[in-house]
Image (cartoon, rainbow, N blue to C red; front, side, top):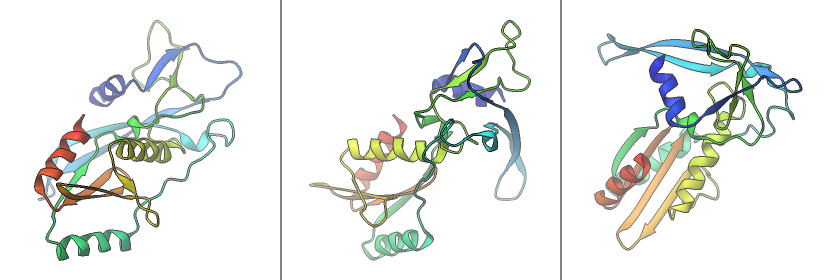
Length: 201
């Protein structure tokens, strides 16, 4: 749980503020899961703090929620294209992806159960970034990632907006987004290494 909260600090997700009198405050809860290895053995326990997004009110806590998700057909076409053109493929999982997405609305959440500030027990957190469980979290993450890719010279697909391409004198780099998983490949392996470094920044 401490690891999860340290990600919140690292990403500047929230600020502790006085409880607002005119704005609803959304509850939070911990979700626990076991991470397994390929043999089915538990390798670590994982805790994720989520907002009780079902309590959100449209127009107050959120406006837009739609975020494009790659269809299975798109991924198959991408893989077929990669095989035909002999591209080397890579996959990456973005850690705590939703915590990177900015939100436009004022959203307040309760302090995490078990980690309440003893000196300020009635205070709540004002979010500056998305939190798992919020209705707008997937959209906020997609907007942040797609904006980042476009700023770095990628072109968004017209038909499939989860597909991004970048063509330069070194070759072609293709990126397919599936929520917080990214598949990418290039005609030149150095482009893949450059992309991997870019995403780690």
